[in-house]
Image (cartoon, rainbow, N blue to C red; front, side):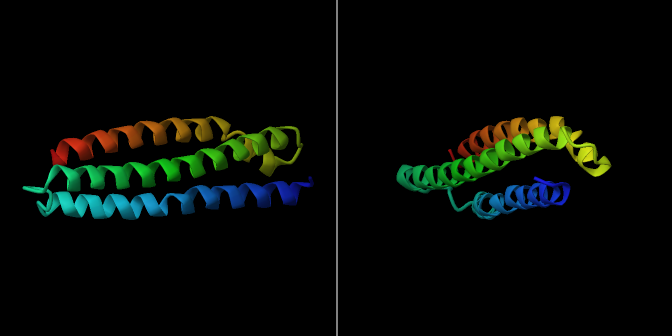
Length: 121
């Protein structure tokens, strides 16, 4: 793959990571609104469990998409490291940030679920 194709693929993967977060952002915004307005106060256990299930499912699907894009991006970074291009070398140097992003997403997802459950119960 030539230099332009590698950079184009990298940009496409970055857009995929960003776009795959949109459903989670919308679900989190709705969940935050419902918690902030007290909608779950007095709600049945079934309603609360449904809300948690929807949030967890949406988050899990989003994480799977993000992890797939990160895995592909990591493979692309390995190809870029072999190139002599200054741009590709600069992009490849961000490999540790890609790994950090993956770890941070997992931690934030777990924390969000725990905080949501605590907030509605």
